[in-house]
Length: 207
Ligand code: B4P
Image 1 (tube, rainbow, N blue to C red):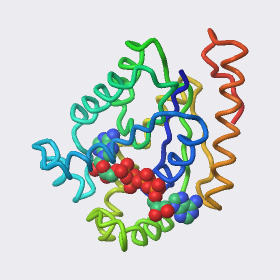
Image 2 (image 1 turned 30 degrees about the vertical axis):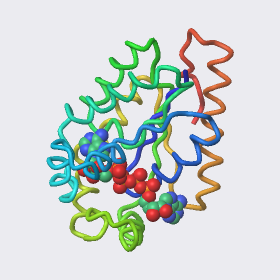
Image 3 (image 1 turned 135 degrees about the vertical axis):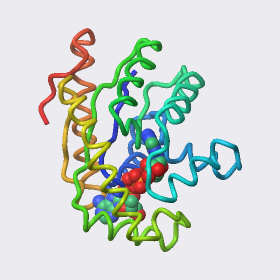
Image 4 (image 1 turned 90 degrees about the horizontal axis):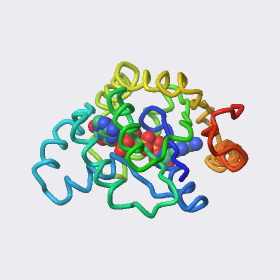
């Protein structure tokens, strides 16, 4: 099983690249943002609570998203791997993901972070907000709050994976296809290393 965490601030391109990666590598896409928006669309109690936080650009409580990911893993036991998009967003979520994957006898292969500066993020999300219907994409103050939340609560998750030698950063500014090729090259290196030395858990890949 090959599990990849796609990381970066809101608007960095995680969702965009995930769509291309799942098609290429036959991975199951687990986006906590999408899972939460599905709950909102269904009008569940969880969705109603999450909507208030999401619309303000704040994080939903760890136990909520961890529960959703646990359920998704349990219902996809035949998957050849997962792409985690927008999860984990806190160190507590990262620790829970390791525990959940261990139950399925697997681990995170690598985290790939897309690096994009704040002004470009704001520009992209305001542009998406013209058509996405997402309240969190339509207000510059809320977008900047999401970036601040990323910097204060989420960015530190990179250190968690760096300590496990699983962290890789890429420039998220440029052509979508070029960035996709760079991400694919990293994944291919990991897969090749895993095939050569499965017990070594494939951490010795050059960024
Ligand atoms: P998410 O749904 O994860 O939303 P996001 O981070 O804004 O989107 P993403 O980063 O995937 O967008 P993309 O770059 O692809 O989260 C929404 C909210 O849900 C959070 O604020 C939080 O409240 C809650 N939530 C979700 N997960 C949670 C968790 N684990 N814990 C707690 N709360 C959680 O796309 C952005 C735009 O950029 C697109 O229009 C795209 O076309 C464009 N773009 C992409 N790549 C580009 C490129 N290279 N050049 C130019 N434009 C590009």
